[in-house]
Image (tube, rainbow, N blue to C red; front, side, top):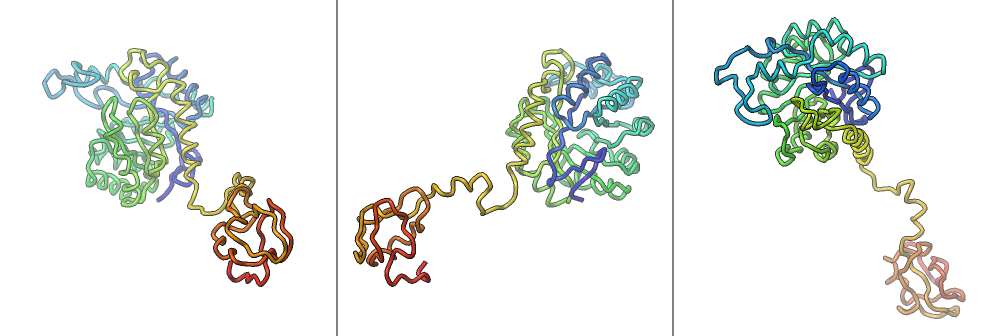
Length: 355
């Protein structure tokens, strides 16, 4: 399917890019910040806000074994349980967050990380679901999410094509007809040179689904560029303050960046247009300034046209310059003044077929 619909908004290559502002952990433990972020996303022009629905014990276990320790990157030194305890959005906030989003007319949906989260979000009438890159291999979870028959968006970070194809097949086999993939690099922040944006067009061609980008780079260049490859959804983390000290603040967009993302991606999409070899509306006024053939000498009736008599110049009211050689040697049928645009009826024995 080449489109999905979330809250009556059509999403696909034929429509303006759908901007998902990812709140993630950027509420930094305060529900007031969550409300501020939703309002900010609305004012910046985003189409939806996304949150994440998990508890530390629904995504990992509490353990100090080496397997559960983060050894590199932004969260180095923490255990998985400690990170998710720090970063999670309390479930008791969800109802208030969904109600506030509705109040300000902002679409909101979430990433569930286990079946209990799906059931919880169903009770909140969540309009769509997002599968995070790290959960793309959790096919039983994808199957359960897809069984809701609501649109499912899946990030593809770290996945090979076979894993992506398998996840899409599970969605389809479970009755989900509205599927989107977000090409992704699961690094925080991510390096633009690793994004390989041409993968977007390849996914569209091979899997016939809506494809977008989950962008973890520090600016908007990668996201804007992805539009040219067919990206229909852009997901980007956003925050009140990049220096806020939260788990995800440092690689998230602030207000100005989010505004730019919303505007620039739509401008990029508009610029794509369609294959066109005709004059555009704005070009019509300038069409007269193209080059054409003009007489640059005064001539008497019957004179033979020589090279010094005519010239290809601007403006464009005369014959096209490609006909200069055919005009040379012809006789003018009337007196000509310098600065006259060359026309067909200026010549004796002129054959229109020659043009």
